[in-house]
Image 1: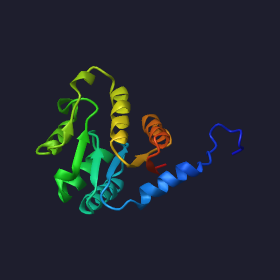
Image 2 (image 1 turned 90 degrees about the vertical axis):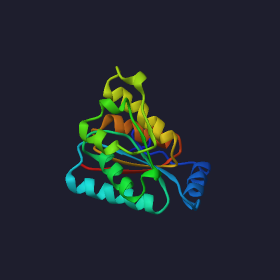
Image 3 (image 1 turned 135 degrees about the vertical axis):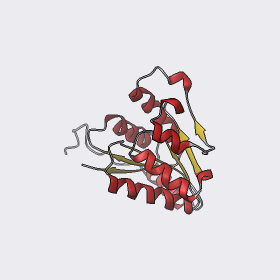
Length: 172
């Protein structure tokens, strides 16, 4: 890519690098957001579930959203197995708008935020707002996405703009 290419990577400033280094060096538990696609193959779901489980076991708070089979359900299953009190779920809309299997998975989880006022929004619009809220509450973001996942790509850019530690796993 040429420097004039708007898609070219920008070189971080010294202040940005210092802030990222400080975040990485901070010891102790963190709030880690894990978001991603609903179209996650079973083997990847198992890896995400193990990642979520390990993050919670090591004392971190994990934040995710609801959704159908995919990233969010794997995060929820892993965190629940480790310690459901270290799991926070921010829904794009309401529990009743979640698929039945997600509703069943949410039973007994204390830290759930839902938004009835977003009930009439499209899921894409509600998800975009939800992802921003999740990102704002965390220090680190892990995202599982495809290069065609427009809402998630926008969320990754939002996280970078807000100087979060971002790890993106592209599945294509």
